[in-house]
Amino acid sequence: MSIEASYRYEQLSPRAYEHPADRAATSALHAIPLLDSVIKRLIDLGHERRLRQVIRGNAVKLGPEQLDEVWRRYVQVSTILDLPSVPDLYVSNRADVNALTLGANKPIVILNSSLVSSYTPDEVQTVLGHEAGHVLSEHYYYTTALVLLAQFVNGALPKSLLLGLPARAMYYALLEWARAAELSADRAAALARSDPLDPCRVMMRLAGGALPGMNFDAFLKQAAEYRGEDDLFSRHARFWAELKLDHPFALRRVNELVDWVQTGDYDRIRGGSYPKRGQEPPPSAEFDAAVASYRAKFTTLLERTVGDVQRLGRQFSDWLKARAAPGGASGAEAD
Image (cartoon, rainbow, N blue to C red; front, side, top):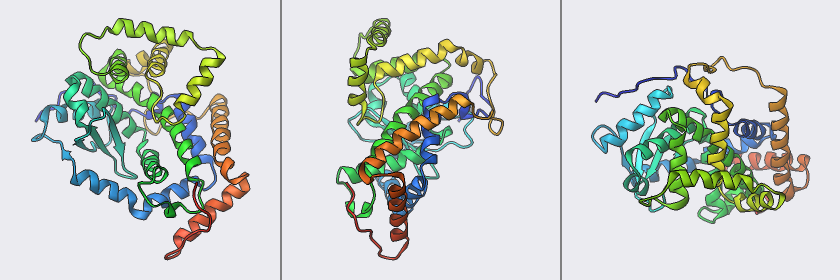
């Protein structure tokens, strides 16, 4: 099967398109003492492998002999963004319109069947470009941790596994990170499709459904009006409404993408001016300040259940020690 890609961003660094909020939030998570160690241990306990087995055993793997048109478009966006390798792609029989990239070390991409059946091939490819952006940015590591924590918080897995951890606070911190990561993947989709309006059209579908007769120009006007309602009350209401979501509001995503294009960064990357992997510029003072802001936000979320940073560190350390011991368990129950 021949894969046609009219252009390719050779050695594209994810830094080229990543939203500042995503970069800052990711760096802030890395900076929380022992949090990465806790997440790694959580994944090492085997639940990530269980997720993989569920997907592989109850979903259909795509390839040249299985939904070849979807597979061809997937390989095409992966080639355009110059992914080091093309992850396995599955379609799962789910009613909600969604896609997901999972895997602690080796990612896999899952499309829900409702998306493939109700969206146009170009719209499906836009979503595939979005997921390819998650792959290149290595978002799948924290996404996997978020999925596992969601199962614990919602009672799908035994909470005894998280005895001694501020599980709900960790969950909300990762949700905040996930919303920022989506803004980066939207940009990757725009690059993969060479049209920033394509992700915006998908946002319209996500917000209102795949209905015939939708007016895209009217939707863009609605997004501009939504931006205009940016008073203190609106910001407060939106903050609380988004708090438990893993994706930002569709209209916010549209406006963020439009703003990025207007800065000229999209055209610069399209013209071949972008950082390559291994040649990224050093962080700026502005970026360091953003990291500090997110770190304070995440630390506050975690401290609400444990008291202070020192106690949080001890709690993480005690949990890691308990989980390292055969049959060990810590003494406080997860919230």
